[in-house]
Image (cartoon, rainbow, N blue to C red; front, side, top):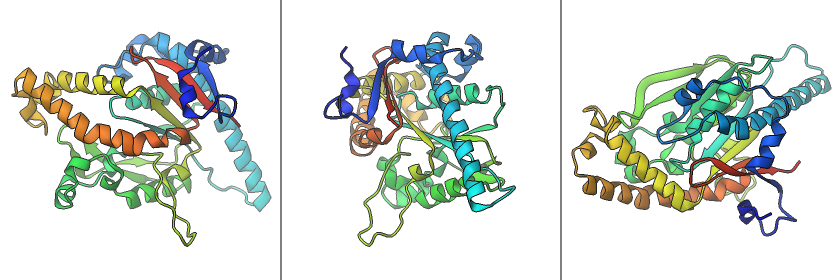
Length: 323
């Protein structure tokens, strides 16, 4: 059996991952119940994402079962550690799941579907979802720093705010605020926040959440965002497919959301189809492709689970890190 995901490592024999076809992965669902309806899946999926109930059965139910096992094991370890320290009544720490991958690859759909499945477990855990978009520096700051064309690159985020947020969540603090972002205005919303109050599980989604930085020469502790994750997922696809999905989404948005006069991209809806296509290709080549190659794709081997999509936008292969 040939598995395309074996490019993750030199040889499959020495891979830190176990590799599965989607069909084999689906068998690990066991008796995990399907708790979503077709209408709910349609509501959860993003533009141009064809996920349906069959895909939920094939891929997401096994993921839900796996994550349930990880959450239970982590909670048990936490209780044992509390006994080790002789601590009683301490606040439990949330289980944090990071989801990374390129633009247009389907991270948002994965995050929303997982959230719905996880909060419908028999234990009814409290599950929250936060994206990194709100932690982008405001557009006026990006313009001042000449970073507008590197929006989405690691340097365009308020890394300090990201780390403070995740640290507070992991410490069990109450009412932790995460800034909100508007895809309509393409900017952080001033003074707007969502409050996260001690969830059992937090899903943290963003293109660069597995990003590392250069390690300090003096050995001082420099935390990465992923240091706060208990489990991480990378949504993967061949570069040429992500390219096409990005262009298709841009052209669809040109006919829908971009027509809103308040949209940051409204000007693109006024262009001819050929002119808009040229703009989309330029944005892909000069911004999103560079970010994918320089910053996003290099983080793929750091994920616990890699979902590899095919031309139909559905998962074809799965790689799970060995314990």
